[in-house]
Image (tube, rainbow over all chains, first blue to last red):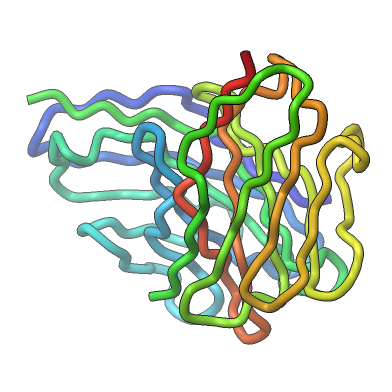
Length: 117
Length: 115
């Protein structure tokens, strides 16, 4: 069964410091991994994805994530946080066998990131 | 990038009435659309998956007669909340996926309040 774990409900960092939002996953086949960000009363915005290839994936707004197969992790990172990065972040996984799951995503519970000035 | 719209963005309705939410893919053909419900500060709960021209697949515990989903074209899916009750108040988000896409593109969400 597919599942995603985001172990931290809340991450607080000071502006200018590096940030990490953790995500681990479980899938039966090869994973497709995604990060989304949600601002209050808005839908989800796509940040980045890992399908295949380089383990380090670069995405929008200076975010990046590293796919680690042995640790089944896909942590989101940014070298220097901004106050405007404060939002709710979701990790999601999809099984590469699209036909079996109709392409549905399995979401983590979300991590609230707060960047203080 | 691909754009998905939702209408209305906010709706208030009285208990017992029905309300329809539209989800449109503006610049691509959405072979599959997904409907989610989100409670405050919580993750997204998948309600149903719909493929164009066929019946929606509902997740366990979601009443198909209460949450009617229609995916009549490759650019439009609708969710109708029938006989709404205050406990149906929530944030409803749709997403869409095309044949050649690995990802889902999300709409901006609809805030439903049932009084």
